[in-house]
Length: 426
Image (cartoon, rainbow, N blue to C red; front, side, top):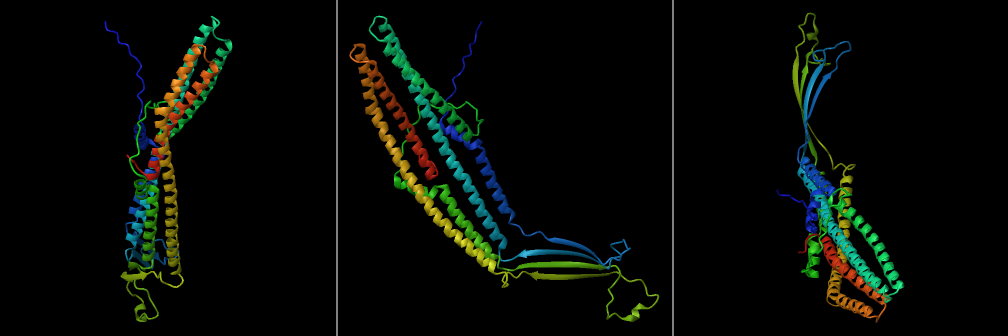
């Protein structure tokens, strides 16, 4: 008989790239912006059509007491009219709306870039919190081992009760830090769930223990060039300028008259209408019943946008759009300067973190580990006291925390650089 023992599988750690891909599929705001972009594209195409024709039917001058609106009316009229927008107005309006759709698409790209950056920074922040929790737990285990050692020595009068109580106090202090860190972890998880489009109370986020040590291989000058060329916020400003230029073209096209054509067919059931010039000899007694007459008419009309009382609005609209273009260009220049300053700060932050990582891993932490081990050996030989050991381990704990913070800062700085540049820098 074979007995199968099912062991619970450990949750698989999720890389930051896998979470980014998940967010790009499920984030509700990103979906909303994508739908708005499609809506703007369809709106642009709706302008690429002529106006609908107008069909009219009229029954004129029906006497009271008569109910046959067709044959008792003086005339029946059927008309068909069509407005023609001349001079390429439809194409100009369509192009303007297409430029607007491009601007809407830039909103999608802007949020997408920011979303990726926020996910990466939230991910590395959670990773740093988990590493802090690990360090605190290791510290507590170390203090517990020291207490066990002191308890054995206390039984033979080689350790004092005060030393044991001091270590227990340090454990209690570390446990309060653990509570705070656990709450930070929960808060960060809620935030990451919100970005991913998951249920906010989901606990299915598993951070890798070893994050990749990505490095910055692009120079500062290359980053600034890429920022100017790729950043979606700056590109949106350029597209807004193009949209305003297209609106200026459409406004200039509005100065061209529109043409209205109309055709009408008229039926007169009572015959031709009598006028003052009608021959009275036709009105003799016994005259035969009036004959139904059919006629048609044609009409053409144009608008007069160049009339003195109407042309001013076109000039004012054009000046408004030109002023808007100048404002957008100034705003773009200011935005690019601000982003370049932030980019320089992020690059400096990255370089600082990389330098600290080398110092902590190659010099600071090994020295403090040696010092802690030496203090512990000295204490076992009654050459130092517990307070000195605690101080040494506190400093070691602090340097380990600083190392993890520098590691997280390095990757978070790269995420900030990608947000400024507007794309991957790998």
